[in-house]
Image 1: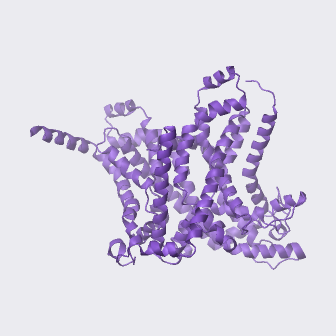
Image 2: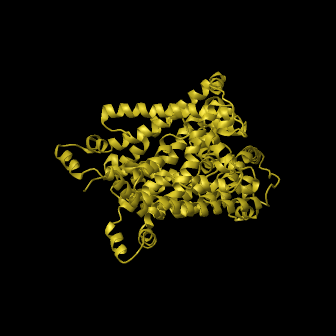
Image 3: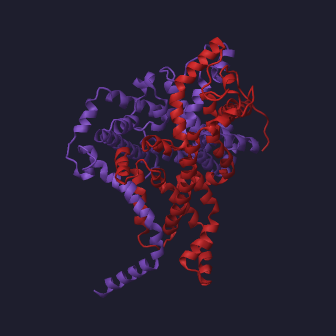
Length: 298
Length: 308
């Protein structure tokens, strides 16, 4: 198709370029801010790159015992939670993909029903209390073990694997479990990668459980810590910045020599977002398929 | 009476043959029971004076006391109104946005450009609301934030965006669109890709320009997907997005920013009024269910597309 640059095309490309820019710019800005000397940042006027480059903010962040602890909790729950979620959902999905399984539609309905009518937050919270999960590490992992949509996405994928493969493996003397382990799992790479991304991101980004189910300071994940800093720092940094802008005088160091609560917060933000930023472009083609299966055929 | 027994035996045999698969499902069956069905059973705390020792069934009945308490609460009218306003704005402004993005991306012929914009547009979906709110706060501050600086160079006065009733709804809806537009457009992109190319050829032969092709071929092609997603979106009209509102709503905006979810969470966990909060939550889910069923029925009547 040949086409000249019409007015519409020019408008369209410009508009979409602006959309793309607005999606990435906040992250560029934060990166620049986090790499700039904290006190200097308070004068503003940092847009694309740091004015006084320093790694001090990051040094301060990694020096902070609380942040280390929180990062550790987040890493642990993400790795453990993702691993268990993917294994268990795959097992369930594989069973549900067997058309010969007696009771298959009953079990599918059994896991579907709660997605259209759920109990709401409070009964769920009380259940967590009764299970003695409140204020434990497991409150991060156990409630996220299964997800109806993810099971359906995996099941749809598994149903696409030709049955002949299983037949021939059976002739070779494989049992059900060996077939699952040696045939099905190795072929499921793409869908397992997609689900891992979905659930991994959910674990990584969850601040709510940390804020409402846990009061033990040693169990707070990084996002909840960021939320606490958000509330604490808002008032503080605003007034500090106002002072710096109006008077130009330096404000007494809260962190290290040049780091401010605000610049540390930006460094923390960057290390929170960075892992996701690195992973998701590589998994893109898989998760696009995953979303389609999930929403059209689910 | 021999026959039924024979089939019974056959069924038992088939079940036995599949024993490993039941074992595979066992963790899931137990999990859904514990984390979905037990809470469903626990809905009754909305009608009881809940105390921890008594649990779901041992606490005394309270009838509709907590529902009355909610409706008599002087702010309940405001809270319901705020919830509906915020969700309606998200629905009416936010719902068409991914469709528009998909349509515009579909007109792009430079594949590299298209892929880049798409990849960038998914990015915000993968960061948490905490990160989004922190970004907003940093970008929009009048004290050296780039947005206000930029407006300053254009000659505009600087604005305190956050915690400001004048800008509250714009920020709520805007940040919601920013976070979700790319992700929500995936499904529409897929639907557009599935449209038969011959339809476009035919339309072109009939003399349809680009906009007429869009109107008569592309839009009808994604109609059923759009209706399905719309029904689902209407179902959540009573929940305005608790994460976002817990974070963005401050004292200055409380009168227009308090919503049902946040009210339930705060009165339940912060104040420990579990039965009251459960009643608020139940009110919310029942209205949500009624809305889905109603919209579903209307959609089935006028368009033959429905959820069930």
